[in-house]
Image 1 (cartoon, rainbow, N blue to C red):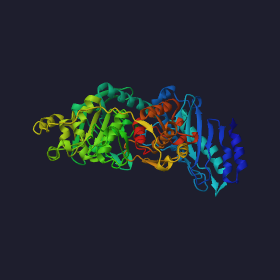
Image 2: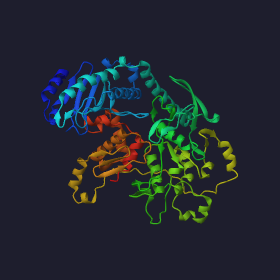
Image 3: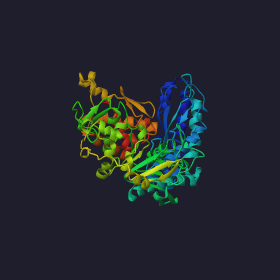
Image 4: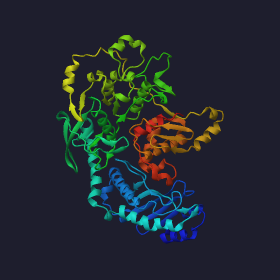
Length: 572
């Protein structure tokens, strides 16, 4: 293995040469505290920065073994270290001068949620941190002294200040790991107590703005209704009280701007652990919970939506339904069935973003349009059966229709951001306003096991060999958190609301590309393909399905629900 001095010698030899000479630096170099690896060198100073990684052995890093005893603590520790490394390099980015991206030093920017990221990986042997550096140049001529400054002055200080236990505040490191263990304890306690969510007393639910997920200052802390208040004894924090939302159908009602959607938003992001100081550290939701909404124009392929939609005028088969341009009601019906396929045990919905005709039909409309003329069985007539027959709970924000009060098990009212349990009083009122007798078709669980098949475009179908080649040459291009392109196809993820990070989108793009390249023969079901990807990632890490190792510094692990959501929106 090369030594740090070999790298210094190489830098001297390529100074003032043309930029491609930087390629000769690729390889590994031993520094006193770590192993430096130059994994990929950018083509010119204006291109995407070069990919670099450092490996610090556990002997050198010296973190207590209890902080890396399982995947949960490893993820918590890795998240803490990424944030510390980011704070360190922030002082040195662009301190080395040059053209284009010269001098840039960057690593994954973590949000309020804690995600498993390839930017920092804790292996049985070492801690790996992956990041990018803009190799300096004047025009397109190498400026080696400036890169030497980065690699031999800036980087060693950043590593020492963020990846060695002796340089960090031990109480902060311990708090990050212990918080994750407390959060996991609550998540497991939900299952033991028959709950779908927990919101701690004192939690700060509102956010600063629509573009900031940081907690709002000077807002009303959450306080649980007495009837729903429970107590948990956490392993590290100790006694915590808050609202436990039981399984079944929960309705969140109240006037406009009183906090209904704020509560729902906190619940839907409760599938993730949050950092200390976020305000939602102890807002924990069943990690399979899925936020659903209508999506006009959505692609749907071979989904059994007959539970909700049947007897279409054109006699189309809704037990294996496909469309290039779904309506709001059809897309929401498909979303529920796809959620069942993904293993979701909780559905989260907001009336404001749902298709009205899918959610409910009032008695007057039923008198005007008879049942035999309406192919849609509204959700209000299926929610109770979904829970009783399939064990799937629903949390619904309702602001206009009173029909859901009759089927709800728990009814919460948001009143000036205060949460009240009004179940008993509303149930008494329901007796004065009975619903008309329902006559929904018999309930049946969707049975379809969809095959993962890739359809060829018209131009490709004429030449099967060209179609096969196109699968091998697919390129993924991420265009932000909400969209990526795979080859010539665009996958729109705008309405996958629990997708929170661009690096999750990048991982989804790589997973889909891997699946298309390896399983497009139609011999495996979608469930089998997703299960295979999950097992590969669990045993080998995200790099197993994310292509070249140098690209591994920009991926974060999505949930299985988001993997299904992504695959289901791929139009081929």
